[in-house]
Image (tube, rainbow, N blue to C red; front, side, top):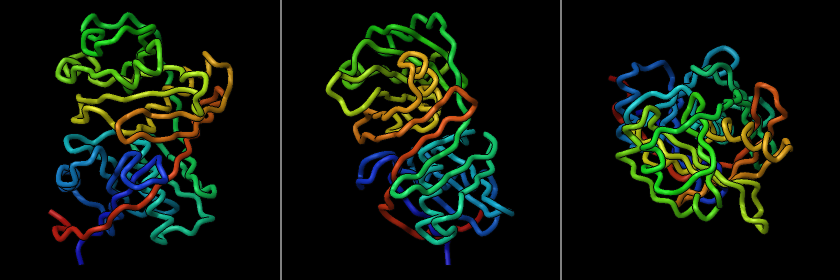
Length: 268
């Protein structure tokens, strides 16, 4: 029997929305080159690989081109697979050992809560090419370890902008979060989009790690700890965010399995 791969739409309860991720629960560790090849074959923004160890799972994430140190939606998808496919019972915590430290996921009804490290930003003077690449005016530019963080003047600008991805790719940081407050009648506190041409993803549909940056940014401005956020990509996705000013951000989302297949080349 080959390696089972499950595809999950994360940060949504509706198939064909949210952010798709492939999840492989491996019986034994595999070589990095093999995992990168599988991720390229799947051609999704992320493919997650898990191997059981002691009280949890080793977890690694790959885009079609590179391994990344942190991925929210593929962690959510991985936790969903562990519970839905019987690797963990519903009352067990999912513990992941990753390049970003130990990450915890808990099943809370129809939602999965992730415990992630916070990512603070500092105000900078953005490179001149950034405004040209985004093609819209902005209020502030900040920088964190993930990307630029750019506040736009309105929700409409966030939703309607069409960046120049080739130019974005040439910037010192080839990844950008754009965000704004929502309109007064919205169900959400803020909206965002995430562009990452540097790692082969022009626009990521829903990005958990971006919300580790957005949480402290909006807490400072709105003076509250809980948010309901919407990532306004074409697929769209909903993220519950809780941040109380400490060193951890709690993100919650839903997930749905959309397909499962068997990979016949189970090793290099």
